[in-house]
Amino acid sequence: MHRAEAELLHHLTRRTFLGRSARGIGGLALGTLLTESLSAATRGQPGLPHFKPRAKRVLCLFQSGGLSHVDLFDDKPALHAHAGQEIPPSVKGSQRLTGMTSNQSAYPVVPPLRPGRRCGAHGTWISDLLPHHQRIADELCIVKSLHTEAINHDPAITFMNTGNQLPGYASIGAWVSYGLGSVNANLPAFIALVSQGTGKNPGQPIFSRLWGSGFLPASHQGVGLRPGAHPVLHLNNPPGVDRPQRRALLDDLARLNQAHAAELGDPETLARLEAYEMAFRMQTSVPELTDLSGESAATLDAYGPEVRKPGTYAANCLLARRLLERDVRFVQLFHRGWDQHIALSRQLPNQCRDVDQPTAALVEDLKRRGLLEDTLVLFATEFGRTVFSQGKLGDPAMGRDHHGRAFTVWLAGGGIKPGIEYGATDDFCYNITENPVHLRDLHATILHCLGIDHARFTHRFRGLNVRLTGVEEARVVKEILA
Image (cartoon, rainbow, N blue to C red; front, side, top):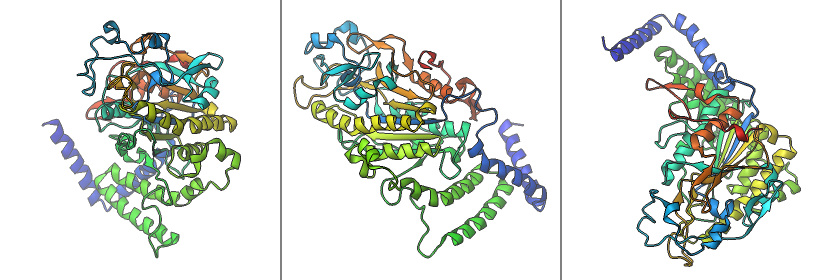
């Protein structure tokens, strides 16, 4: 008998047995299954963490569009010496370019847009476009040697957030929720927020699948919070329905779903039950979360003038801190607008102004409250930008194209060495010359900080033991661990 036929017959036999046994045995089995399912999101997977974690929670500040490492973190003397000259063929090599620059007749070198200065005890160069980052340099581990195969936005963003360039895979936040569960029963383990920058507007689209659960149980997908009076759609009771009525409705619905689960053994039915229960609890936890009346004027001022405008990056940074202090396991901010193909001289300063002060304030706020020590903060993007111009040199419309061969991210807190640089690029910020770090390595390192061995952290899908770091080699970047 074919294996698929055998599995189908096994399922039908089990379903028939449960359905015809007056739900006696089925009811007992369901009680155990339901209890296990509804608590799985809270307790995580058996055996995890694999070892003592340094971080309890993660904050990912994702700068969507590809921020320019050349302009912000990786200045080199050669860029100024060769300004306006053709990038040497030996540097450019045979790299695949996007269709936006592959047909250019010239590839002149463009040095950083603004000067910068050496910051912190390790003297890392940070652009004057990020003066508040300059202030927190001693808290940051700046990785200058990240690389990716993806050269277009959607596969690159998907790769960074799910470990695969193709849609349909679980996001890193869903993996963390699945593995470690939740600490706060009244809020989801994984929450995402999106803001639009003042650089490129509109920025690259941000799809909800970037915080989806993919093939993992649906209860681990991220919950997106929206700005304004209704952060979660359909969370409030409709007119004429009070909280006791909603509780009674959910109890009746739970009994129907339990009967359906007993008949079919469908885990997604139990995931729906958990979603309904979480929504009920969030009716009280979300209004308290978004009420900023208890925040001091000094705290609000530290995050900058945009903090009082719901949906801005600054407002989301403050909300992220409030989520982290409520022990939400994984918080992710997506900030759009970093895709400076054109008008670099106008767009990039605006985009930096969006994020610089709120990001620094958030890091300092976490440290002041004792949260940075066990919160891993990642400031990431999907790829960097080219050192050569896109468009005519000196034209106000000039920009920079995508560059996946080498780019910069930084980490702070939760098990990471503060105040260091790791990795290096060549004199043109174009190729990695020291300590390359692939996206898979970054993912493995994030999991390691949470006490998870990426090689042993798998989920059965389509007959394979799938993991966040994929099937190719990945390593923990131990050199940046505290």
